[in-house]
Image (cartoon, rainbow, N blue to C red; front, top):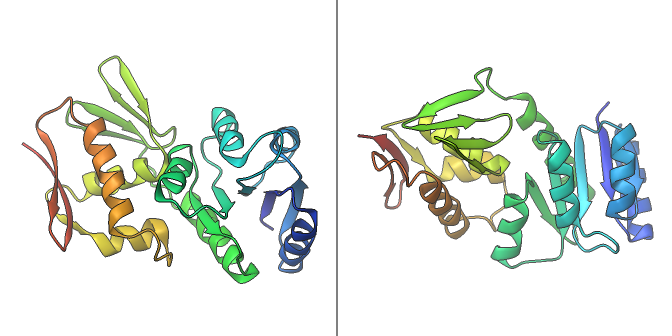
Length: 224
């Protein structure tokens, strides 16, 4: 049975969603705000966390930041009415794994929960990767260069790992989007370019490492 921490301040919606998830076999703990969620998290070890973004006392983005200080692995799915790319990318950068725009259907939420859970179970046995002069820790989402360390988001770490594991090969854009954004057509080329640009910046201290955009096809990581 998958355990879900569900954080939503709109009580009528929370009741409907919570009961629907339980009917589908999930164990659900509900919190009405971020502060209560942190207290529940101390006693409840969820498989997936579903966080509303706009909440009193502590919003979903702040809550995700606090969660990632103590838990870097459990998937976080944001529920949000926000549609600006910058807001959504911010959520991923803070440690989110997925998002669903309101209003949503319960079937979509269930699919996203199951997908997020599978993704965490499908971690490769290898945890550390030597990428040029960098060291990538895919469990803690850390990228190190000499005595400097950068905290990556889940998607940034996984995307960098995929590019490195397919070094010198072109990784298709469609494959990347399908793997990390599923069926969500909102995150397409523009948002992927933002992630790639950020990864290039992280790797800029080693000039041998290049991520080339093969126009209309995908990306290729090379190390000269």
